[in-house]
Length: 164
Image (cartoon, rainbow, N blue to C red; front, side, top):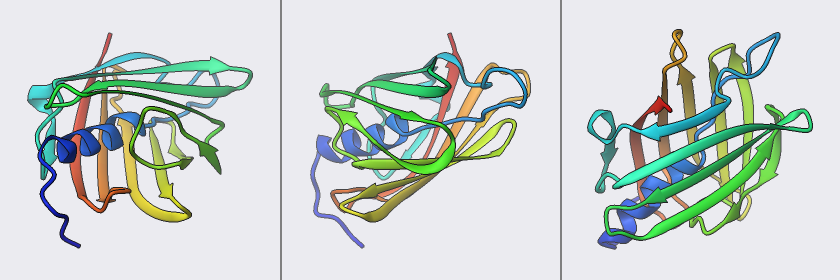
């Protein structure tokens, strides 16, 4: 599917999808390997098509036996987005709230101690999938996103985050 040119909106949508909906592994036993704050390493990340965001942070917090994920992103055009969701890594649909322009729900499952898979949906239709991996040393989070955004833009990105 080819999308009509949307300028800065294209990069904002791609950035939000990658950054907002990135999830990582839940280690057994103990706390998840992704708990804490992560900052996008723009130089190491690849977004296609579209421009890289100026900045992004992801925060993972333990809340009542679940993980709350919060994303704050400044897109290439300067627009700002904020979104959050809470998951138990059980594959159940979780609502996404905030100023995001991406999926309405996401479903996250744990692949192994360092890897999770996310399926994002908009109006009941799968839009993108993401595979997120925490490095063995716990210092890097890499999120690979593929599919089509809620607005019809192709998503093919690798976002690399550094632990703060």
